[in-house]
Length: 393
Image (cartoon, rainbow, N blue to C red; front, side, top):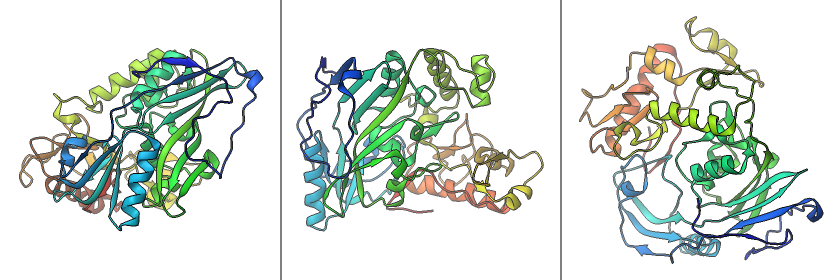
């Protein structure tokens, strides 16, 4: 997944350029068999006066940025963000662009593209793999790497586009797994305190598709994410019925890591959820609406055959895709709406797609139509999952 070599270094070595005074992690050096350090050297930072943000998002919509900076080191990320903050210039931190809908007018400030790559892994028989990943690494490349190394815990998150640094913000999840289940630490730049701040997983306030980083979007820039993986060739217990059926196992059982990854990728491709330049159904931000969390009373008001998944906190999760389809919006809906350039995926009703040179306005028109239709049919207001930049529903 990387261009650089794997080298063996002492477990106590560090390359931190900025000291982190909020959290220290110690590991027993005598228990670690090996430390794998993958060092990827990216190109120098380049700046463009007005690139189209459509070229940097999986939706492929969005106007220009006033200034665009591609930052390939931690120092460049911090210095670029800090300089803009000092000058009162709006900042947008751009990861993989897979969870963004950017306005047609673009962004009137500095866009910082995170391109800092690299992995450090400490592996031991008793402690598993403690893996620190720079924010600019491809998420799916990391998953493939973990499966190849027999690191357990993220195999069901295969095929999700974007970069590692964005995963804790959204608490990315799919097929019964959330990234928070394996995150040990998140290292950030705190724009309010002007210092590096790290958070143990328990301090990240993870919830369904949210975290403290999402709740304070103007405060933290994710620099690195550390994961704690178990070792082995079998997956975490399979929790999602569709995935269990594809694997031919019962829910709660395990399967070989490679088979789980292959099955997840096949399911996602069948739904247009793996980015493919030739598949317009994948020109999207994935699932556009989160699955609603309802009170028991709200859930009871839904039709009898509506999905209901009781949660530990007493709420009940239901399926946004089910609500959309049963509100009358079928796969491919949107051809006769406005310009017809934004449509529901022909494979999956939960994905809004750029079918033919759509604008952000086209996507928003479709999203509002679906949201309002579901609200009228079931009294449930769907909440968008992507970050909306310069626009709103």
